[in-house]
Amino acid sequence: MKRFIYFIAAMALLAACQEKGLPTAEEASDADSIYSYDFIKMHFVKEPERCLGLIDTAEMKGTMTQDSCNMMRSYVYNTGMQDRKQGRHYMRLVLDREGLDKTSDVYISTLDAYSTLCMTEGKAEETLNAALEGIELARQRGFKRQEASFYATAGSAMELQRPGSGEAYLRKAIDIIRSMDDAGAQPKASYYMSLLAQRLGENKKYAEGAQVCRERLAFIDEMEQKGIKMPAGYYEKQRGGAYCVLACCEAELGHMDEARRAAESYEKTSYAKTRSGQFNILPYYVKTGNKARVEQLSERQEELRQQDDTISEIYRTLFINKANLYKALGDYRHAFEATTRASVIQDSIMARERDSKAEEYEVKFKTQEAEMALKEKEASERIHLIIIIALVTILVLAALLLWRIIVDRHRLNERNRDLYVTIQQMLEKEKEAEEALEEIPETALSSTQQLYQRIVRLMKEQKPYTDSNMNRESMALMLGTNYNLVADAIRECTKGQSIGDFIEDWRLRHAAQMLVKTNESIGVIMEDSGFVSRSHFNTSFRERFKMTPSEYRKAIR
Image 1 (tube, rainbow, N blue to C red):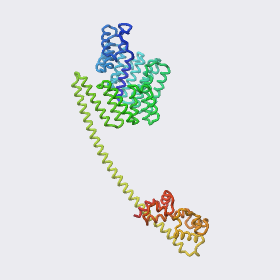
Image 2: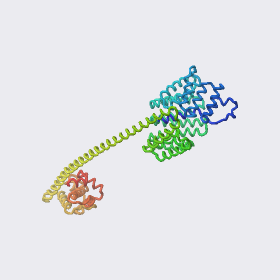
Image 3: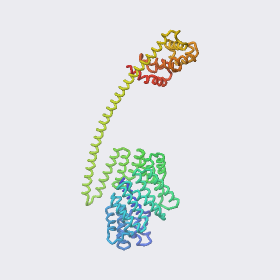
């Protein structure tokens, strides 16, 4: 996160000082115009060495004050030549000079650049102090742009110290710019919105981040509709940046359709096809786990960077970002390789920049390398310990689970055996009741009981229930009577059973006997007992005997 903030801060300083166009000295209307603040500011990024000479001459000729010259030197070194040490030196010359009016333009502008530099270096406390001072000075002078800039820098510094603490300052920066009746200042509001959305996303306030992105898109449309003229591609770039963050926030919220639409909208912008803009969507593809797309963009990014100086801070940052991407995808092998590449580039940068502090840097690097090795060793040992603990835990849990399964199975078998005994006793009582009925002389029985006696004898001797087509009509036909009389006899002598329930009861008793006395499959037993549907058989058997056919068979073995 911090590296990203540093990069944004550096780009902000660059954007604040760089403008398009490169007029030559011959094109200047006045010979002294090339020694002016405006001319040098236009060229210090592309021609830093030439601009240093122009600044020296301007100071000697008196076309710029000493403080203005030192301020411009700080811009040249810091942004044009990427020499932060020298840039800081000249900024301090301005800020520390006794007698300089702190409400002057040069002091406030230098303080603005200095706070941005401190932010780039990750010095949150120093950044915050400078930004808070700048807020007060800019307010006194009525410099709305600078006041907003200081609020944004202060908010970013607060975020470094404690995530979430700087959001109010970033919102204040946006409000100040949007309240200005100055079309030229409005683009800053879009930039500050991008900072706020990034912070909200990093603070996991994804809903708020998505809302800021939508507000930013609406604001960009409003700027364009008002006809505010900006460099070619500006609006597409702003929309692309907003869609990138919106896609990530929506993905974090689980709104995958909205996230996908935002990503597609980004891909449609011309900014998505530019060298600098095509890689901003990487975090979205990392979040959605699109490893193929991440690797494709990362490789393309590396190919483009190889066209430039490969021993540079920018190229090293590329591999750091790749390492972070692979880490987010859980691909630690590639993350380690990218980190190693970044370390190699860092070594090369250090070798190229050897100066009076070369020995000191070398010692620091070796110390850092040793610390990394120690941390890796400690991490490896921790991983091994975690693995051992995890394995032991898994074994213990597996043993407990196995023990629980065995105990539960034993209890189930015991319960089923007890239930089986109860069932046998119940069936035996039913059998005894039927036999007792048969022993009673017919003369002592009512006509209904006599009919029921015939029904029981029929079921025992002919087993008509094994025919799946047997019903009340066929039973009545076999008995030579009508089914209403059969139904009355069964209902009276069985305490309310219907003919269907009576037939199914005999089928279930028959199936239970076969489960005990034969080794036939349950499917065969089901068919031999007169059942057609396996599911109906299982359900009826369970309702009758409180266990499945398989459990019933196991209970006796």
